[in-house]
Each structure stands twice: as structure tokens, then as C-alpha cells.
Length: 238
Image 1: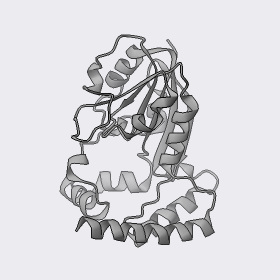
Image 2: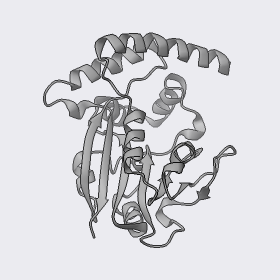
Image 3: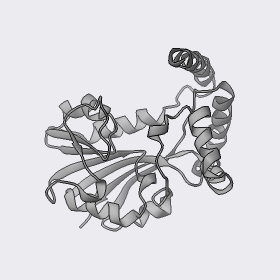
Image 4: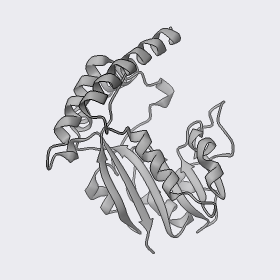
């Protein structure tokens, strides 16, 4: 069953990328843009925390470019890469002002209180240390419409059956840090970079076409806020 799903995904991916190459050959996926920011910010002087790291793949891939890198997650997966620390982001087991860089990949949408979490990030960061985050954009119709209109059971079914997200990878979402205005209100940080970025889904061909249609519309002047994701870089200021 797993191999059948994987095979269908690869077929859909190949079909979708042929279309994408013709329509928007310059398109870059959200993970490419996020990884690029990580690499641009890393140096052999950096101490880097990847929070909500899951299997810690980012640290495994890029840690050679840092002085020291460690992944942190509240759940320890059986196949997690090392170095890894199991901890709650609200109570990080690190000294104050001890790290230069923090990354969060689809994590902040699960923060139940915006400032409480970022106060802890502020504590462990050195002055001018940076936070790189990628998250969902609450103003995208693919985000706010399901949030407003669909009961949790239906959203859960869509995630597991349509988007093929594993049940253990689904966590409560609060969307406290999922708009430009909310990010600008985070105390102790300034926004260095803010971009609306698109997501294209390969799990179903019809789904890819819907996401592609929204992406093309969002390229029109003044409509980038419709894109499904946000990429932001914050800098500690005090």
C-alpha cells in the first residue's frame, strides 16, 4: 500500500513539474527558499538551534556549516538524527544568550501564545541573533476558509486522506503568528525579511492545478498575500 501511494505521488510529481516548467520555470518551492535562508545565515561561528526538528534532517544536512547545531523537539522520533535534545520550546535547556540562529519550519502555527514562546527564543539568542521561520499564511483562502468553515473532524480527514499527512504529524494549530501584522508585533525582534511564498501540492493532479491557479493569481500586483505560506527572518533587538 505504501509503495503504491509513493508510486502515484512520483507520477503526479513528474506530471506536475512538466506543467510548472512551462508555465513558471522560475518557481521555487518553499523548502528550497527556507533551506537557502539557513545556508545564507550559517557560518563556522554560528551556534544553531532547529526547533520542532522532527527527524532532525536539517541539522544532519547543514550542521557542517555551523560551529555547533542541535535539533530540538518535544517528541523523540525513533529514527531522529543526532545531536538532538528533547524539550519544550517554552523551556529550552540552554543558557541565556548562547545561540546565534534559530530556525522553525512549520512550527509557529502551533504556538498557543505568541509572546510566551518568543520570549524564550529571545532569552537564548545573542544580541542580533536571528530567527528564520516558515509557516502557513492565515490570509490565504486555502488556510482561512477551512479554518472558519470546517469542523476539526473534516479537516483531520482532509489532512490524512487528501494531503496524506500521517496522523502522528498532526498537532493543534492556533495561528497566533501567521500574518504580517502578528509577526511585526513580536516584542524584542525586528523583521529583517518577510515574503509570501507559494506551495504546490503533488499528492493529487487536480489539487496541484488548484494550487497552481492560486499561485498564478498571486503573481498579480497586490495579490501576493493570497499565497499559502510565509517566510520571515527576525533579528533580536534588545
